[in-house]
Length: 116
Figure (cartoon, rainbow, N blue to C red):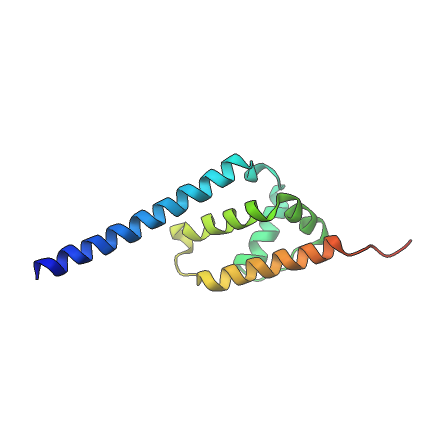
């Protein structure tokens, strides 16, 4: 019985350390790349809504999201998922919506604009 408790404690310790390391890694990426200063608040809210809730993102905000860069985008989404306020969300669903939003914005920004 004692070995079961020790094993349980080690699993909890491993999971806790893994989550803490992921948080530190994302925080470091965000800090080193100045991710939190690359988008205006209105566009941050639009991107958040399109990924974590139900909503769309405007062309202007797609431009800011692509300007943010994929590394920052991914780190910010992952850090948000680590927040206890979002513990009831399904990470796989949010990651899928994050990738979809990124790809849609990238396609929009990369597509040639119609001639005037």
